[in-house]
Image (cartoon, rainbow, N blue to C red; front, side):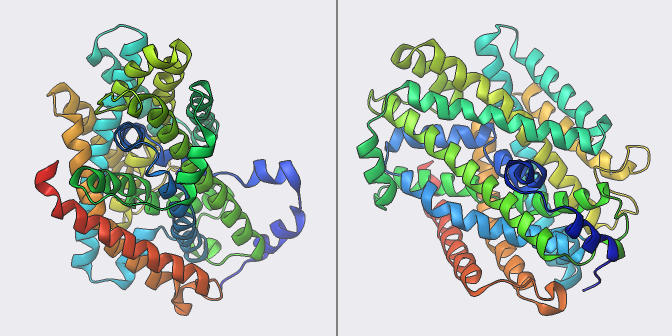
Length: 434
């Protein structure tokens, strides 16, 4: 499999356990999981809780193993091949298919960047009453500078610690005093309501939870971690030890559990307060405003400021995954967050372009709700073929060696494909009901 001596040495030398091991291991998977709860995701979960009550809590339970398997495949592909996901797709798929998938995901990412910046700006404006466009430019510039000029290790560590901001939504759920026995019942009892609004909301929840940009972001972050360790060539990165695979799975599992944990508590908060009070909302900012008279200033502040922290996590993942996709598709000579803007100008140009378009969307008043809808449509369509291709790759011994999918992983991957296929069909079936 192309193992190198340094990999075996690292495995032998690093046998830390307990908390020390967790702190060392947690990285790409935790960042990917937390990035999934970006402002657009929080808005979707808020609307789900406010409009459907506790009826979608079971989705948080079932999508956790689905996300763990999908992101686990992505992580293994990056570790074993030494390439990001698009680099492997480009090698095994017809070029027209690789281009099509790349275009769809990058467009969806760009819409999401604009919507997330809008969400951050609107949230900050609720607390600090400065003009909306001031906050758009403030967050846009800060995030752009951080991605372009911060060294990879500093950026990765910053993103890792920003995951703490998501606990704001866990605390908020306890502040509003939900009825836990009822919540437990809905969590373990799947239910589907055959109405256009309920099914469309379910599609939105699935689309923002199992989303294509995370597949690419995960695999490429694994590659960046290896580059940061000095494995600067594909030959040095190719292959993985037992310890590296175990660590990657631990990282991914913690990240995906954390992601859906936050999703669960956002739905609980909004169902307990807004659904019970029959408050109609469209965004997380609407949810924050509506929470204030129902649950007090603390819930309002936690919910609002959490949006800023999650945007700091989500936007770099979106813009970064677009850059990795473009770089691998067009085989840029130098690419990656471990490179500088000077050494990898094309890679960073994609990040800058995505950020500037996202900022411009808010300057010209593109409706962020419509942007989120269209990105959900694109992600829902793109997720299915990407999941199929990933599952094929993860089962190819010629690519993955001994690290092919287990039978259980294939079952969950198939269930995910079926669920996401249903989500994509549902989006079109209820197209005129949005």
